Length: 104
Image 1 (spheres, helix red, strand yellow):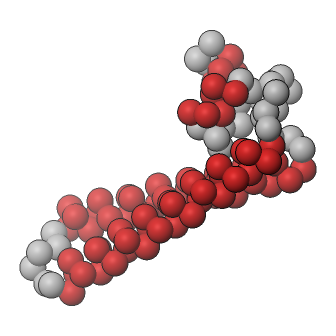
Image 2: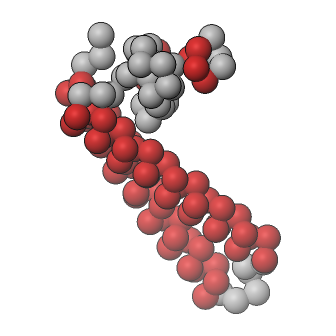
């Protein structure tokens, strides 16, 4: 059985850490741009990809917090079965059990 209070705390901690990392990455990218020639087109593309990945992860974490609030956290959105605690430990924002994800 999943401890929802514990999961909520862990999700919020991950969200906070991701927001901090995103801020640090944005500052570093801005510094590279301000220094002129140091920022290549490839680096700018990598910075953009990292920002998009972080934004996607933030949305997933926020959605997971919503599922904690409405009581559907830990329930597979495809089959309605329980998502294992181990799977939730690995990816707390997952929406599918291992079988529906194709891992079981």
